[in-house]
Image 1 (cartoon, rainbow, N blue to C red):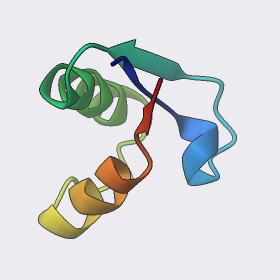
Image 2: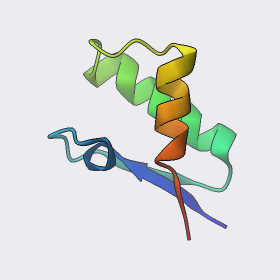
Image 3: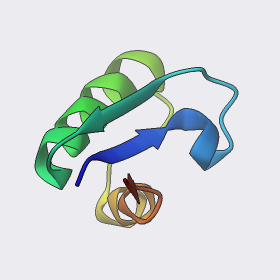
Length: 58
């Protein structure tokens, strides 16, 4: 199953989205995007858990 996520899923006014075959691959893309575009977001355990809860499978 393909996994996907977008910033709009988290209520952000950002058009970014990504998809991947695994959660690990998708989270690598999310991490890269957050570090570049959303520096105000701290990637701590609580935020990572919240982000993972927004992942959709299709």
